[in-house]
Amino acid sequence: MAGEAPHAFPPPTGSNICSLYGSEGGFLKLSLEIKNTEEGEICIDLEKVLFLIVCILFFLKRCSTKKHTIIRHSPPKLAVPKFVKPQQIAASRAASLKLAVRRESFRKAEHGVGEEDGVIIVDHGSRRQQSNLMLNEFVAMFKARTGYRIVEPAHMELAEPSISDAFRSCVQQGANRVILSPFFLLPGRHWQQDIPSLAAQASKEHSGISYVVSAPLGLHDLLVDVMNDRIKHCLSHVAGDADECSVCAGTGRCHLY
Image (cartoon, one colour):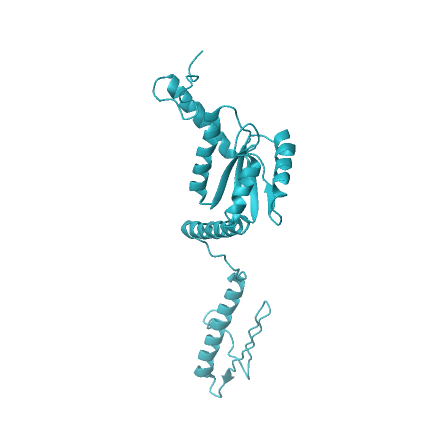
């Protein structure tokens, strides 16, 4: 109606309770007591209002954090292996190799030729004296290179000294064990029968002296280098760039046919 004051919310009467409920597992209940005085004025406790505002802000922040926070689980710590530098690996391998060489040297020394061992290098023997003398030269080279105290040459047949002569010479020099090493390329009848038979016969004259017949040269890796060296030298001689080797010296056989 005209002239009437606009409608307004009626002032609360008595005690009104304002409650706020949270969600997602959170719960908050706060109350604000609003009282009517007798004169019709509203009396509000400001401390409670401020406390209510702070609680509302805290509640909203908590709800927002729950909605947007991503929980990250830290993976378990794993033991990371320490990386070794290549230099350290090389040094370790070098040390292992030196140790292996020392052990191998020890084994060779333990089972090698001793001061009381005699070595007899046996070839077939030839009617050609120059061939027989070449065995003497080889024995001298062998003794100088190895440092063995007792080393003697022997011919299986056709020339002196014989296996029996060389065996006796070794014993006279103080050998209590004799090693017969055939100066043959491949195993054959001489290695299987003839040399063992002659060695057994020679040992009968010297009781208490043991002996062994070692293997012939056979298929040894170093023989590849020896043969290749011979081939290259002969080709150099044929081309006029080298003299005859010690094997062919004076024979005139190393030439193209």
